[in-house]
Amino acid sequence: MVVPSRGGVEEYGKLKQEIERLVGEINGRYTDVGWTPIHYIYRSLPRPELVAYYKTCEIALITPLKDGMNLIAKEYCASNIEEKGVLILSEFAGAASQLHQNALLVNPYDRQRTADAIHTAFLMTHDERQARMRRLRRSIRKNDIVNWVNSFLQAGIAQDLRDFPRAEFFVPSPNGDPEPVDHLPG
Image (cartoon, rainbow, N blue to C red; front, side, top):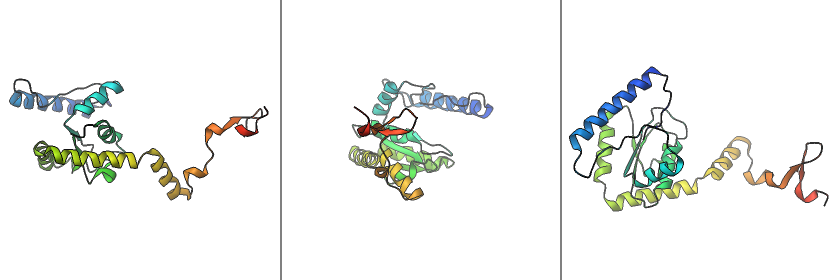
């Protein structure tokens, strides 16, 4: 799956053409009755369809050259409830710092090692796939957004998320200041 991005940038157009050429070449060479090696989809997908693809995807190759958090890798793992997929992840993805022990990390500039990781993923036993994905999913559940915000606040301002007032306990007063719900006239 490739989500269209920066369509007006010439380099992106060239990269899209190269990807499509390679997918055609690989599928033309290795497709067999009832099996196609690469299912290439170039469009945005509605969330339910995206999750369905994540759930059935045997190998996720997520290889940004430079990236922030990269939630796609985490979405793939979270959706992989049968724990049969393998995550191949760029060492330059932000999620690599959290997922490196159970994903196959690659340097996307190194084509041979990336190809080796794909080969390793294909040859991986069911038990190893399942164990790796189980650990990836556990890590994602443990290090959720609340954990991330809390660690960010503690590192940045030495505050705990529990020390902040909860928004649902406050309503705007007539003068615009927040007023605790339990102090409203009633």
